[in-house]
Amino acid sequence: MRHSKPRGFTLVELMVSVTILAIIAALAMPSVESAYQNIEMNRVTQQVMHMVDFARVQATSRNRAYQMVINANAGGNGMIRVNESSNSRCNGFGAGISDIRVLDFNSSDYKIAKIVQVVPSALGGSYNLCFKPDGRVLRDDTAKPIPTTVSGYGSGEARIVIQRLGGNKGAQVVQGVAHQIVIPYNGIPTFQSGFPVGS
Image (cartoon, rainbow, N blue to C red):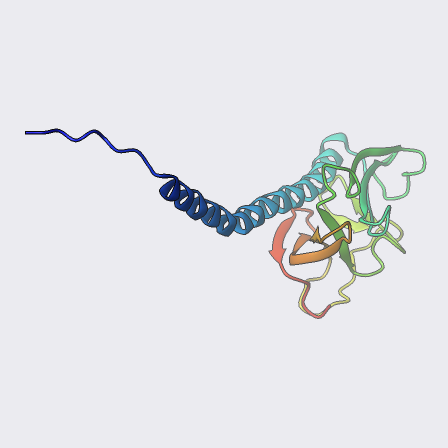
């Protein structure tokens, strides 16, 4: 009985195998990239929520008011800053400590996203958020609750809406589902998908 020698791959078989692997890799790349971008967007959303939690917890533990300044246009992509008041009221931020925490959407860590909207629209313009030691979130100019100006959301709620940036050859455009960080009267942030109702 003759035993045949084990036969290797021919060059044609090897080329076919490499081609099939290249096609499979090309098909998988968009979903891998999309999954990575979703993970990054969730990370940025969590950072915004951590900023809100930080202001709320610090206000309670230090018995000082904390201010959250939301600038949707700073540097192009936006910025969120947290300041400490010199007292427990919403009027001592000039004499307090500035920029205790800063989340800059133009920095390399967060440039995947952009602040595309704040609700109410006067937020970050006419007034900012004031986190009181008793847990309430108020306007920093009047020390009153945020008014209901958009149908579909509750009295006292503020919203920061961020969206993923993408595009080719440096042209950055917003893409994908918007992430809403809802900051209610009690200061405990929640997350919602899409744009605010009635916006």
